[in-house]
Amino acid sequence: MLAGMVRLRFLLLLLAVPGVPCQEPADEAVARYRLAGKEAVVTRDDLALELAERYARTERGREARRHLLEVELVRDAARAAGLWPTREAVAARRTDLERELRTQGIALPEFLARRGMKPAEFDEYLALSLAHEALARKALGLGPADPVQREVLQLWTKEEAERRKVVEDEATLPEGVVALLGTRSFTMLDLGRVLLRTLAKDDRERFIRQVALRRCIAAEAKAQGIEVSEADLQAEIEVRRKDSQRNPRMAGVPFEQLLAAQGTSVAGLLRSPVFKAQVQEARLAARLYPDAEVQRMLREERAALLERHGPRRHLQVILVRALETPNAIVRRDFAAAREHALHLRETIAKDRPFDLVARAQSEDPYTKAQAGDAGWHGRTGPTTLPREVRDAGFGLDLNQVSEPIRSADGYWLVRLAGVEEPPSDTVLEERLRRELAERARDKLLAAAQIEFVGS
Image (cartoon, rainbow, N blue to C red; front, side):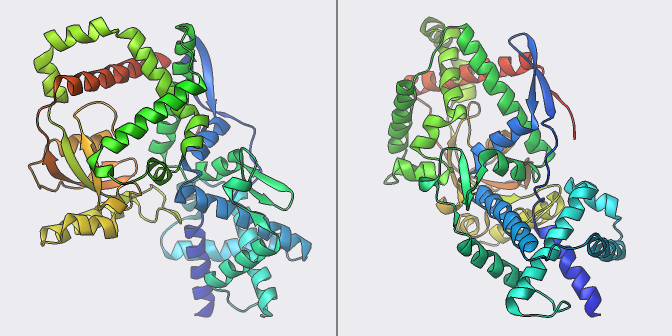
């Protein structure tokens, strides 16, 4: 009975922890595309750096960094103490877990495939878990067969990090470094490689498209003689600052605080290739669609423009996150996420206010603190929500809550909280310009002819 509980505990631990960083393969292509008429590639490391840039200052990035450091702390301490497990011990642990999986009707190869793990990576994880337990037992003076709880492992890691003087404070770290362990530096690339191991297929392709599109925008801007200086970036930041101050939903919230909620800062925007690409994209759109063309469209296509850019919708959302293979950060697959979203919708239907459920249950970090408030959205143009979620909001009656809507991140519930008055000419022109920028972006993306390769 005890042996079975031990096996189950180790299995659950395996399910809860992200992939183990191990010896990385040579940087391989994950996509091919056309850049300025020539073939180009996006590599695994390009993708890893994109992920690190997106998530480094969010909870997802902090969790990946903690895991990265824990692996190194365990590996160093176990080898120094002579507690690194033998191949026989690893094989025995693998046999235990394989037997436990069979009792649940799962074959080990299937289990590894779901997590995107190779057998060698799996054995590396098992060795680390055995070493971690051995270190915790030694610290507590326990016997070799005594069970070790997850809380004890976490305590050992915390104390070892303090002893080794781990540094994670961004303000004290060199550019491009996410943590220091003694004299050892962990870079954005190291962090991105951990994040890449937990990435769902849809998200993987979305980030690949972002990398390729950004390069295409830069190449087209160069071809058009468009240069973006740091002063231009500063000016765009001030435009966004003023826009946030005019937004009633953001009243009283400092701009820097809004950026922090998005996992960035003013300094982060200035060095962000994504932000620079957004400014380049706006300049390209202005070059492709000059003022005279915009004014002509406003005169001659007004009815169609109002249909696309007419009264916006004020939306509230709840997100239940999901991955094809759940991990320590995202604990539900898509089937479980949909079931939970349906449960939340039933709760709301029983007179539980949407905002209270959103504040307590939503897993979208950008709207949770605002009780699910996602702001105002038009039918087209840039949106902070997945397009399928935004589009669903336009099919609702006032105060109606949608059925669960699937996106790459999980399942959403959407509530239509308000409908605005028809836009003024000034606002209509602003929305048209955003549409034209998106149209230019779509043309570049189509010309890139992105082809995904590899697993």
